[in-house]
Each structure stands twice: as C-alpha cells, then as structure tokens.
Length: 220
Image (cartoon, rainbow, N blue to C red):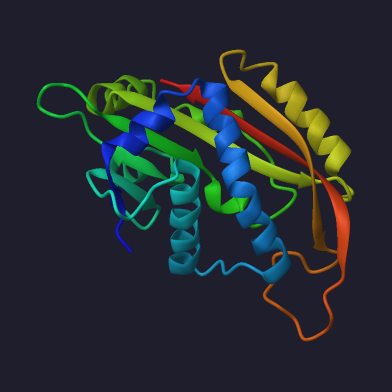
C-alpha cells in the first residue's frame, strides 16, 4: 500500500481549526478502536505500526488514486523527530517538509497512538505534546511549517479506574491552557471480557458500553 498522498489531503486537514482536526481524529478512529477491542489487536511491532498507518489514512481521508509527497508514517519509519529527542516519539502521523519556496510543509503527529488504539484505560499525558528540548519546537516549524501534535484516548465507563483517571486528566489539563481539547460521549457494543486480545474460542459477549472519547492537541 502506498504511503505518500497528494498535498490536498494535508491542506484539507490543516485548513480545519484545531478542534475540527481533533473531532476528525475521534470520529474516524472510533470504528477501528471498536474493531480492535472486539476482534483483538496485534502488538507485534510491525503489525501495530501497519495498523496505525491505516488509522491515520482514515483520519486524513486519503485516497490511493491521489498520490504525492504527504507521507503517512508509523514508528517503524526513522524520522529524526523520533530518534533524536528523548521521550518525543510519535507513533504515527503524516509529514512533508517545506519545499524550496518555503511552502506546503505539514507535520501531523499522534503521540502514543498505538496505546490509544489498543486499550480502554490509557492515561493521557499532555506534557509530551510539546518537545522536552525547547530547541525542538522552532526546529520543527522551520523544517515543516505547520505542525500539529495530538493525543487520543477512548475510555470505557465500566473500567474501575475511569472516575479517578478522568479527574486526574482534568486536573492535568488545567496546567496546559494552550492545548485544545475535544470530548465526546459515545456508546458502542464492546466485548464484556478480554478486550483487545486476539479472538478466543469461547463465545464473545457484547455489552452496550458508554465511552468517553478525548482528543487533545496543539499547533506549533
């Protein structure tokens, strides 16, 4: 499957306000999250990266009939942003550097994306939306132009830690007023047990479950 797409997909995504991009991340990822929850997800590195590339293509609404330089990536691709900075490691995204005229550069990254699509209780951590090294942020803008860093979580309400995790997230976000937040209350038929594990022989019982979807992000 090709990973490079026409710049029109980058422009369409980045022309949205930050909240619009976060809404699209939630809406276009949720069906894949439900599928992973109910049928299982492989966390073998190569398989997880391939899964995240597919999710990113859905978020960006790419089309294989329109290829170009806007490259969808997962962590198996060694971009310097992934390998050169401590604890700054997006799992997936799409990227194209500025051209010689200083135009048409875009960098969308989804931090801890594999975690977002393989559990229903992953903790949000807005600290890692922004590079730890203060020199990294202007470097990325200089090289890629428009840069958007995001995180995504789907939290099932039947988790024993849901309330405490939600309260902790709210307290944490108060310390990051520049980070945009979109929350949605959703429902889905989810496995009652053994979520995200590969299919088991026994009958899978599905239960209607409330899910809080949270996407956070920041423009550089």
